[in-house]
Length: 322
Ligand code: ACO
Image (cartoon, rainbow, N blue to C red):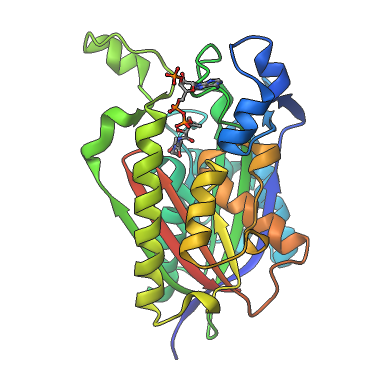
């Protein structure tokens, strides 16, 4: 019997504090109108000083576990996607394993910037299809607010904090239809988050903040995401019209609109969280998936295309029959 990966639960968590565009316009030279028109963002959530990627991930994970109706101990693999880990090691995955009090499982982090959760889904799918794991917890959790320069209007307007989770299980029924992940390490200069400690040792004068040449990233993102739509549909011998929902990485509404157009899809079939969450990096796709499932838009049997693009560059997609 063919083994597929099926979604059995999702969860999400957003910190309480809301920072609006108007709040940001008090400290940097920008406006609510400029930010909304160029990005689609009105506000974002910012984590409290007591929160971490693992504490936020735990809340999202517990919600996914509860929805799935399983015991945490049944999980045999935890993959956390994060670019803002609690510590470099132990991995946030191990810290989450401890928080969930799971004795016998494997846990690790993967780092693919904003594409992290799609990369993690792809890894989880390989483990499940091969029989190496039966139940996998994938979490994307980010505290971007700690790695943006709040005086840089080119980046501080974009990012937000949050965590998303999905529980996956082996099944005879599809499931994840295909995943596609890619990297091109040739674009380091367009988007990077330095490690200040190693930069200092190497005599590089770098801050611990996200550096981005936004306009150049934008152009590559639009072209690349267009190509991944083609690749995903071709691999499944599907037409655009067979996709019910687009669950995109939430970086910029104009990038998302270009992908929807490529799918000949109305924006009504796109799960958008950007307006109130901003770009939560590796958490964004899972937060959007959770929202679409919880509010009943995404129903069992619907075909869902998830996609993301981020630093590296990295990009990927997952086509799912929910
Ligand atoms: N408020 C007002 N004006 C601004 C702001 C701001 N917050 N930011 C930039 N500007 C100005 C610029 O200085 C520039 O002025 P100039 O024409 O006088 O030089 C003008 O607005 C246009 O700037 P652009 O950078 O060309 O603006 P653009 O339309 O490209 O929008 C944005 C900028 C929103 C950053 C966009 O480029 C974007 O979304 N890029 C993609 C981001 C992304 O997808 N990142 C990948 C994922 S993130 C990850 O992996 C971590």
